[in-house]
Image 1 (tube, rainbow, N blue to C red):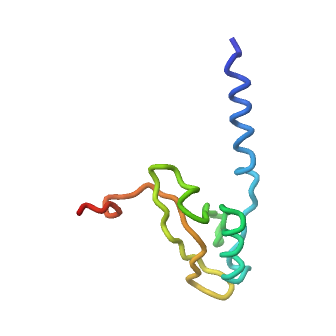
Image 2 (cartoon, rainbow, N blue to C red):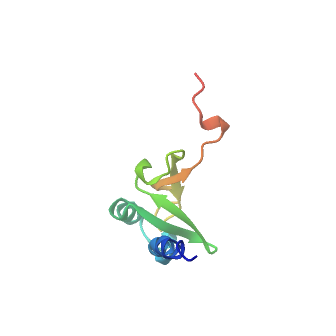
Length: 99
């Protein structure tokens, strides 16, 4: 009757590292330091203020198979448009190469 319970617990434990990952405030760091952090960690929760955070990844390998990697520019202490890394997202109509 409880045969699925251990699998559920193990699955939820796998989510803990992602939930426990601290948010990094980009406005307090120089651009080069944020880029280096994303490259070193592979993926980071970056906050630009206002309580919202965004998952930024090093490259497309961190995205799901049906997602694309979109270059993200976020404000940092020394650069209002720092190319910090990529955001995984599902492609919209304009993203497809129809040729």
